Image 1 (cartoon, rainbow, N blue to C red):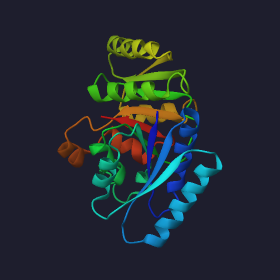
Image 2 (image 1 turned 90 degrees about the vertical axis):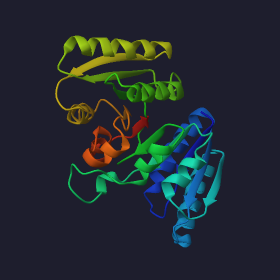
Image 3 (image 1 turned 180 degrees about the vertical axis):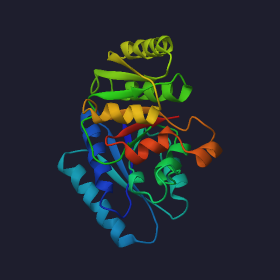
Length: 250
């Protein structure tokens, strides 16, 4: 991991993403880019950019500030992410207004839709990312997320984890888990199997609330973007309610 992009807006909450990126950059020797898209509040933005740079400088993490002209924030950030290894973003979807089952319309989803690299959403707090829960349903999206997380984090940071398969078919669960356990072994990571029936979002949240995991890895936007807008998804559900950071790919 060499280049980490961190969107910084005018809210103090951006510093949670800065702290998470700082920890990763310290571990892997990466450079952090603090990126702000002009939204007409230059004073507040400069305060957050200066604070983010101060935190990175304190720990000797190489960094630079990138200021982009106004426009569609998600599009601008995704374009800036070209060549990056990871986008670390503070997501406040859990604070979104509207029905609990409604689609979250956020910068996080906009960047995720367009970004050429994985995205780490910091929802409530930053964590050590040492014991991930890998959600797998056999889809290309979920496999891509697990593969990118393992490629970036293992074995330097992640050496163990759990594969959660949500299905009513136990034999299917074992087959799917075996696929990912093989992938984990290729990266030197031991993965246990946890099988559950029911709704994926509920099962994942219950497992995380047990306190055993400090990172969730899931495939995102498995449906078409139109269906995402109409019906929501596990991605949407977890962005609202997951208490630990979420690694997503598509």
